[in-house]
Image (cartoon, rainbow, N blue to C red):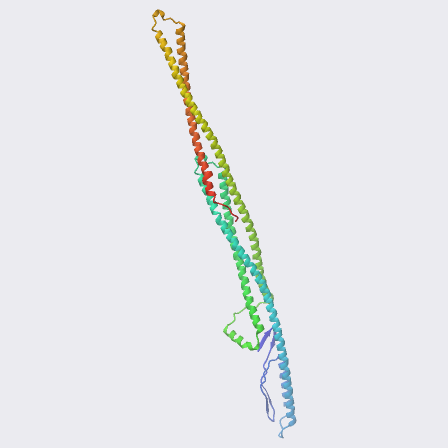
Amino acid sequence: MTTTRGGCRSTYRFCGRIDYKRWRGEQLVSNFNFHTTEADCSYVTDRCWRTMSVRDQRGPPQSEGPNLGKIEDMRNHSAVFRGECTRLILETDKACRRMQDDDSKRLGQRVRDIQFLKKELEVKLDEINVEIDILIALQSRVVKALESCKEPLRVTLLCLEERMKRPPSERLRDGVDRELLKEREVIDGVASLLQRLLEQITEQIRLNRSAKYQLEQDLKEKYEAQCIDNSCALMTTHSIKDQQKSKNANAALPSLAVTPTQWETISDINIAKAEQQKTNSLSLRAFVESLLEQMTADVQKQAQATIAAFQLNVQEIKSAKSQMEDQLGKILSEIASQQRISEDLKVAITEKGRFLSLAQARLDLRERRPVKEQCHDPAQTQLLTEVQQLTAHINKLREAVAQSEEEQRAMVRCQIDLEEIIQVKVTCLYIDEVTCPQHKEPIFIHNF
């Protein structure tokens, strides 16, 4: 049969039955079976044939009695042959033990090589598992950050809608509107960036798991190979039958033979891929951590800017409202004063009317004097002058009353305008000071 060990091929052949036939009788060297090398078998075979050739050259048997010398010679040759066989058995046993020792050493070295690579693979597998766990935790943070952007965005849009409920005269693009629009833009940008980061993290987790799978498969194969080599190292001649039975029961799958260099290269490639994915994971984690910190600062900064804009606008509205309320108070006071002066003018007109009636009554009464007595005396002149002056005063007083009433109407219109503007300011103040802060108050931007 033929066996292979360490790339060296040794051939063991079977030496069968050898028959020595002589003319005086037939002698049988019965079956002797042993394992030896090809050179040793050639040596024994040549020795046997030379012995047979020598005996055949001695000529045909003679008819006389047995030749004791030849029998003794044959016996001596048999003893020599037995000695040679014994020596050959000892040499082959020694060679087998030496080869078994070499096999054990080589198998032990192979097991140590496998253990070394297994250790490296296990270390790299632990590292890639740690990276996967960290990336999964980071993925969860990014998902929570993405979810936390929805409520601030909803509140910002709600505040913009609430401010659209202001009167048309106040729907101006003020500082609050600008900050709210900017806040919406910042949150939208952050959400979009978080979505892209989430996709990158998911892809990196997939790559890490692919590298993990390759390492696990390599470790599994290394474990199987180690178990097989350990079994080979512990195998004895008595366990060959059991091994042959299991071999017949479980047919081995065809495998592709690789060189030791290729064998090491396969694990090196898997380790290099895992190391590359680990490096990529570290870079991605640092990048994501930096972006999360920056995005948190941007959102918080914009939220503070929006709150400051609301506070400033509230102060401006309150200041304008206070000034208008002061003006309204003055207008109301002025209207009251105008009403009083108007009443005084009317009272004065009434009084002056009585004096005018008195002067006219005197003139009428003096018209009753005799004709000769109706002269244009100083008294008559005075009465006529008095009537004219009183009439002029009354007319002026009436003009003043009319002007006072006009002033009152103007003041009332101004009062109405101020009251309307103040009501508008009250509405705007309620939206900016009460409604919007109530929506934004529960919103707190935590660190992503």
